[in-house]
Structure formats: C-alpha cells, structure tokens
Length: 217
Image 1 (cartoon, rainbow, N blue to C red):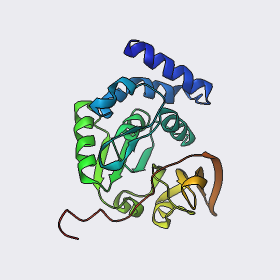
Image 2: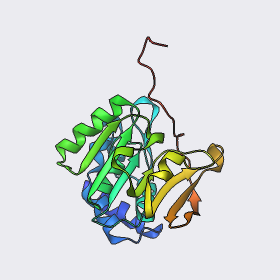
Image 3: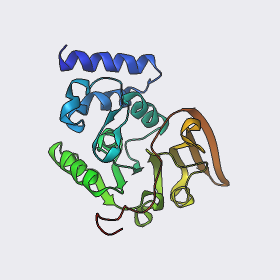
Image 4: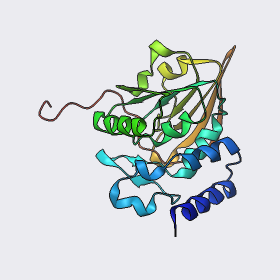
C-alpha cells in the first residue's frame, strides 16, 4: 500500500471516530508523520497507533492527537502553549492551525530532535523551551489555548491554569492513576474555571524538573 493510500485510510478512520473538524483533518494530512517516527517503525507511520520514540516516550496515536486538537477549538489567530514536545508531532499539527505554538519539553535530547524536524519542515511559528512543563511559560502568558500531552494527576497544575487567558481553553489528561485517566477540557471564565470530562486515555505522567545528567545522582 502506498503512503497516499495509508494516509487516506487513516483520515477515513479519524472521521469515523469523531474527528469532524476539517481544519484538523487537513493539518493531519499535511504534516508528514513519518518524519517524527523512528526508522524501525516507518511502515506504521500512517497507522492509527501510538509508537515508541527515544527515552521511553511515545508518539501519540493519530486519533488522540486529532481529538485533543479538535477539543481545543483552535482559531488561526490564537497562541497555544503545549506541554510535552516529545517527537514534535503534536506541535507540528498545532502549527498549521494557529498563529504561534510555544512548546516545553523536559528531556533535552527529545527537544533537540524535535527542533531539527521543525527546521527541516520550515515550521517557523513554533518556539521551544527546555524545562519543567508544570511551570508553563509565564513570560509569554496568558495563553488562549493550552494543550498538555502528559497526565497531570487528579487536578491540572495551578501554574498552568493561572496562565490561561479569560475565555481560554486547556485540554489535559487527568486522573489519579494510569487506569483512571480522562481527557478534560478546562475553560477560564470571568468568575473561575469550568471542567468538562471528555474521554478515557492512557498517557505517561506529567513530571516536573528535568532529570539530572548521568553521573550526577
């Protein structure tokens, strides 16, 4: 099966599973997922499955990427904070849908690889930072949209919700343990935060503080 045929099959599967936003589908189609997938898994780049990347992390299932992106209700003039750059695939999809993406990753090797991919694909509206994603990016706040691609525990980190603009939307997996996670949409109103549970997921945990370099522990 050709790459184009695999791509079409994936897009049809996304539509069947609730991805109705044509802008999101177009972004998924335009971003070459094979550029974000390790060589041993190239034959699965356009399959609807999560795949392993370096340092024990994963590139998310395309359906989850598409549904979480759709849940942001993203406008083309908005600014997005993404927590958990990983391979860079989610940020690349977001970059096709908004004015600017700010993305934070705690694992330097992953961030370096993602930056190389962004440059090769000329995704010039993505700004990266190496650091603790639970702290957000206060110098650039407030953000109209925040997307967290790791599980944040029972409640969203206060530093992140504090950086959400009035009228803004955050999409984040929350849950007390691995089996009880759900994607949650949080909105900031003039009077506070509202929370809407969306669907069950399984994400790696959202961790604070970059790990120590080898030999320093």
